[in-house]
Image (cartoon, rainbow, N blue to C red; front, side, top):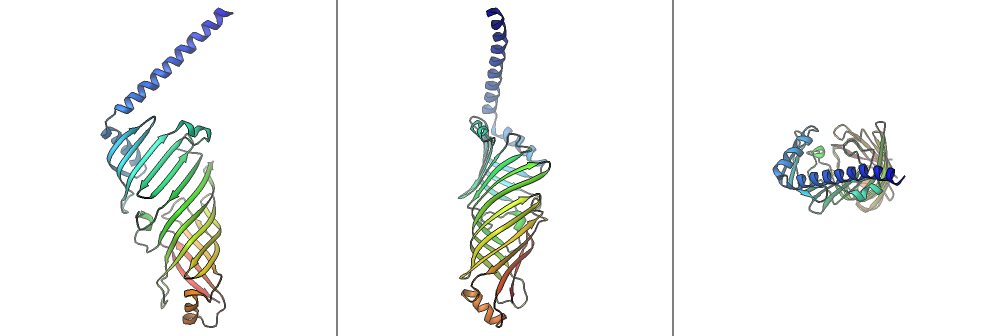
Length: 284
């Protein structure tokens, strides 16, 4: 019996030694690869997804990751997005949460932190945190030229995918949402909602907002809405119905005097393509 166990242990030790040698060899090769080579490989991988990548500096991050500095991302004909740093890494500690793939994108105080399941090229679940992102500081292609704008204080979401279906839930806080008001003869040209907070759920390609709170010119707003085809931002459409809680306060009161003196209530409706939404006040 002792001889049999010895015969079993020997191949196991050989296999373990070979695995450690291979891991060390791959790690050494990765560390010593020139930054231009790493960048070329990364650009080729992203180009298949329609994304052009340029970076001023590229380097390997111990134990297993890549860091790009001075990055510019281009998405087709839209404006390029400049970034300070993009880090893609594999964190073994993330296996305890089954989210070892980690992508961090930063520009100034704006940060997007994304954690994905092991098969990061086709992840089944993930967690996303976005903070400090605004349409004024980072020109997102989908909103270019629409007149709409936003400033994200923080958005957190968790999602799972199965059989091509997406399920997610989360919450968000915005410093402001700005939407054009193209109504003829309107005394205001845009509606800016401040201190926005919301909860949302995603089922398939529809994002539903069961609760949204905000402030417009001294009046509180609350309401619900949805974004359809949310997985294709360029084709998505948004509908939000917001109720003015105190319609005779703040600037809403001025609008009552100018547009609807006999009305008792007011709503703010936001609708249209997500890339170019518009707003209108409804008095009744």
